[in-house]
Length: 327
Length: 248
Image (cartoon, rainbow over the protein chains, first blue to last red):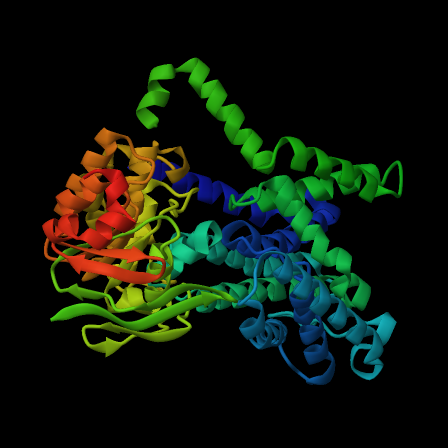
């Protein structure tokens, strides 16, 4: 009972925080928050595969990119389309791509899975550059209309865009969290630990992997679509480049692979480091690289793992009995 | 009636033939042991029956139905379970979560994305009952990787039985166990397999002769003899090939 009430209080505080964020912190940090939210959803979609199912993909950017291009193309070519249908079409593009690839990719794992995605990801990148008539080539698609739900355009009202983006990204985060709590989420971690045993227990491994693969593409598509709207630009380098596939993996690793909220922490650290380093030098990758090396070598469960370990140590020192009871 | 039957089952790994036409017959409700020296093809026999490998030739029948080449998940659904010689549990999941995955499959909850699994009270209840029966309730929240050897073997066996199969194949369940652990495991199997058909691969002759109703001796990919324990004990060919040097 107490715990339930406490939870409600936290939810209310959280919602108020996000609701009044633009008023309190101003437009600059509002945009930082949108960026954080976009990359959190993107990193969470990677963690669905990597942390929960044990599948490392070097091509998650293609779903992110398809989300962005799909939405941009819809807004460019379909007159009078609303923002939500446009996002929906972008997400649909990502899902269709995942459905097409899934029969092939769910039958492999490990290195083959990673490399296949590297290949497909690069293929999509090159296609975006070459199919100039559709994708705008190197320039990408820019300055497409961004209609609001209640206003003509969201371009001049970043605050409205913030609310739209945060609601969609917030719901996405909740949905991804919920999936981990369902029976299907259990099968997922089972596949990660021991796919053979999952098979012997009576579950269809390839089909289960396909479902999680398509879900992951769905949420990557959501993130990509919002990203395109946010910048009012989608381009091969901005959405489909290899760096866009690696960034979420790094966030997941730094935050804590396998924990649900780890990737969000990872994205926050990533953005914070970026922000701080850029004041002194352009080579942010150098610093991120060093952090990644330290994390991989000394704290394989990321900052979330470190936090859990420290908390355990502190509580063990304070109240040995209480810990015993908990265990 | 035979619940499981193989007809002229052969299997080769490339040029290396391992099974040279095995005709195994398992009667419904019996506990049947497959014994034989190392390299006789016992595990390969299990693997060809349970879908790890597709046999090179020959047929497998379950309750008269041809199940040759069925995939493991399909076999699980028609009522065939198996455990592994090398412990094959979900290492990062707790004992509870391990058993729960078996219970979920048994109850046909396989693609549910809508309900929270911890709110499914029937599943939780069944899982806890199973944990109590196998004396792992105390270790409910211990990750499989942190269980003692005996307990992780018990978990391994129990996962094969928690899906409630009619026929279960246990591959060297007592491998590496101490005397006491083996005795516990035998008692556990007696308790959990009541009314089921059990096929075991086993090297420990004490276990074989205390548990099995019938025994099949496999020798270089062929069946040397099948029969009741005393028949096997007195079979000259078996003595010469295998049991002689074990002095049973």
